[in-house]
Image (cartoon, rainbow, N blue to C red):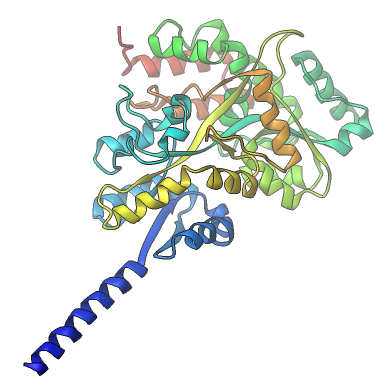
Length: 418
């Protein structure tokens, strides 16, 4: 009997020990397209979480940005995706939720820290379910070389007339390429071009929502005008811009060879490590002095739970931490230019990031016009806007022809709800 009792005791101890080891060995894997952020996750974010949650280990496992969607979908279909899914905004992630790949996080502890606007990129059309924790938004504008501006006696332009006068002055001097942007990769022309300056014309949310409702068309003047302005950029982009890739544009600016960079705030952390000169930023110029300014303050990145994760409870613990002010502060300062969507105030140390976020106080915010609802069909309005924006800048299409093609493509599948 003693032998049996001892055996039972040893078995019980072994089972408890195994359970303890299993708890200690819970490992969460994060899928992401932000391979640039690997060191930040490994050195700052994950250690901060693991220090408070010693039973959970986290691995950040990113893919190349251009391969992420396809790679993630393949993994989800095969059942091999990680526990945590970094979420792109609006339709791409909504599709994952509708397919049952992302869990409903509406009741997750910490979601109360986000406004409806912050959650809008990862909420169903009826507003009943939220499926990703909001992490950050990015703001569009222009980054400039302060030394170049000082040398040429240029102040940051506030109006379109001042903007083109500055470009003319830079071009006449000849020391710098006036503006660093290429059209080879297409998306730059739309994201840093059309979606950057466009809200000034279509009045941000007013125009975007009117387009969704069918009350405005892409052939209306306020949607064609930004293409006309983009067409003028051609003279300031330097020789061979048609063959210039996104990394080429980044290098052109950070090496000090270009004076202005049409930008998203996500460039800040990269530029800080590469540029050997002081940088400043200015928002998209208004048409006339005194006009309301608009900025694209675009919900950019969130994180959700793989509905088939075998570590759901540990993953929810992690997601609640992502929803905390602690995460918001670490993330916003580790990645200046990615602005917290948390309702808690976050103090940022980077001066360029402070400049971008200060525009929220004087400009009306909106999101990219193609991202919500309007890119769910074929042809995809977002991708078509890349092509047409590049064509207009290259001079191979007129603003009117580009707008007509986009409207016809949209009308071929999209019928506004009445």
